[in-house]
Image 1 (cartoon, helix red, strand yellow):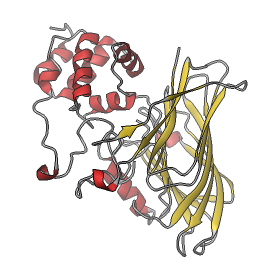
Image 2 (tube, rainbow, N blue to C red; image 1 turned 90 degrees about the vertical axis):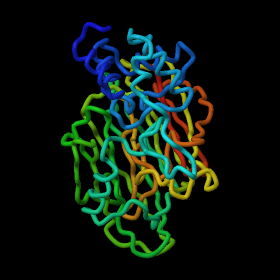
Image 3 (cartoon, rainbow, N blue to C red; image 1 turned 90 degrees about the horizontal axis):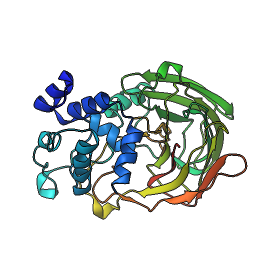
Length: 362
């Protein structure tokens, strides 16, 4: 039995997430180190999943996840079944068992405990709702800057939206910071053809919601170009950037630029597609919209939606459930840094689903 009294207590009394968190802290390992140890054993578990397992936002239940838990017992030098024994029996699934719990396995439908309710409240405060399709994203180009401290220091977004019907006059940007994010330090700056309106922040869930005002209401079929910047000086090391689209978008381009003083060892792109209508139970509703997600120091950072204008989300709560039943992540493909220490990806019509870049630090 471990010598650390807090860890012994957590292993004896649980719950699972408290025991896992105590074990990770006792061993002094980062989530990235844990992920690498698991990968060396042939087990692919994202840092987002590891983070949410130790926060109690998800519980490992799928066979591959349970194999990872057994491996974690070895990596963390814990007695056999000390973590497995805290999980209890699997939760009921299927049509006859009601909706799938948002706390089951994989990545959570919401980034932090209570964030779905908090996000709804923040949107309500800005007269927005989570499921509003008044704007369609026809194009989005964004560039992410990774600093010498390995954190995402700045993101700039150029976005073209088309009104599906009359009246949309703004886009609501929702940012979910990484674990450790100080939301009071997050800054949003309008660069072209919009201005920042009201901003709401919630430190407990690392959420920042801001209006980007067009200046007038659009008529159906009209387009609007907006360019804005988000800076988060929290300094949390990150290894992933994901953009989630709750509704289909025509084109998305992502560029990730690294500081010459902090270059990754390996970079990959990935895509994950939302289940089709036939793959979900009628009651399987997920949270309000991804987002950050990004999913520990994983880099899920923002979801962007309109006030109705909830189109793409960059890592926040999604209406489909990443990590949910039949969630299919495509095979990753390698990206090569160019002469300017950057990589990029381009997608054609995409969504609903998520696409992004992840990397390993040397």
